[in-house]
Length: 464
Image 1 (tube, rainbow, N blue to C red):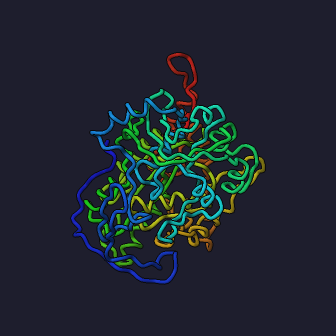
Image 2 (image 1 turned 135 degrees about the horizontal axis):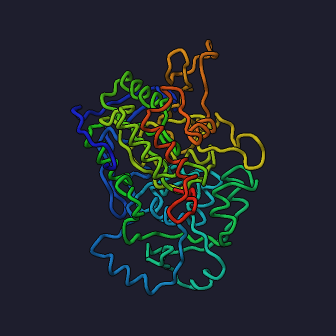
Image 3 (image 1 turned 45 degrees about the vertical axis):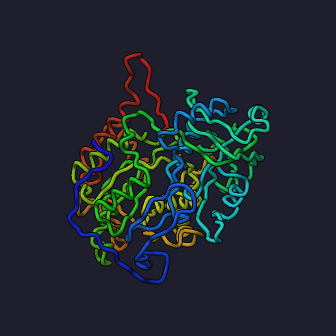
């Protein structure tokens, strides 16, 4: 199984210009030519037809291979900061340019702009979106060990040197303010907060990253983790004249597939010749009751094998970001990162990046606010937003279809909770809800949670 299903398309490369009036499709305008000059460091050219990265270039923070041993020796002489697994995921995100034009963990000015404006103002006066802080916390003892050094070595949980952080700035970690402004609540029980913020240090350290080697997880899925550069190269290889991204952290059912195939049809109707789908499951930290990444990838493979999605027009890759569950704030980050990967269309649905309220019996966010915020967000004006059409199981047709309120009695809504209950009980959903191969994977996953291992222990549901 490869990181994408690579089948060469026969469409010629072509640049189209489309003009309309708003931020929602079908209203948009695409540039004919996207060329830029590098300011510093390495830069990658972008052909006409692919959206320009934020800041005009993709940031590449990876140390060139001939210099890596020297950097390792250099790092051995520096004060050390130990990274959590989620910190390493953020190093991965930064190193490949998903957060371009960020060049490392945020300094205080970047942190405050992100918290208060959901954007960063660049030296040339332009604004790019940045809605979630990408920061590194340290405690008092680490701060004391760093002393007057302006550089630190970052090491992982196995004490392996991951990166060097240069020209550092240490500033206070305003935890309550960070949580309140990112999540809109300080209620207890927010998964990412409890995992990474509550017990984190009282200081944040920012600076410019030099990542010594590519981040690998050795989990059998590294072949799926394509960088923004690699994705852009693949879209160009396929002669894509539009790229539409679909982010998900759940198994794909036929309602999702209907939405994605319908989106491609809409783009073809608008005059595009070869729109390509980026099916982009989130691969960083997720809460414990989400289906783990390895099982989701198995399920996505079956969706392609069963022909639910067309492998010739679909690229499957893993988005390495951790999940915040921060609703309208976080969905801006998800959209911004896909711009850097080359997507100029972003599919957004009900309650994107949302979750149930951790204390009260209700959703934490208004279900429609995510798509509304995306249509107005600073720095996302170039991205065309594709709102979900609501899909449900049409009992008269025996398949997933777009909901028709004039005959609401004919439709069955199968919630995530209902889907999980069916899978746990090894019951089948209605025919046409999910491809059989994909459903079998889901049943096997929930069965694995109740099947003792050879050692007699019940396997734990771990974050991806």
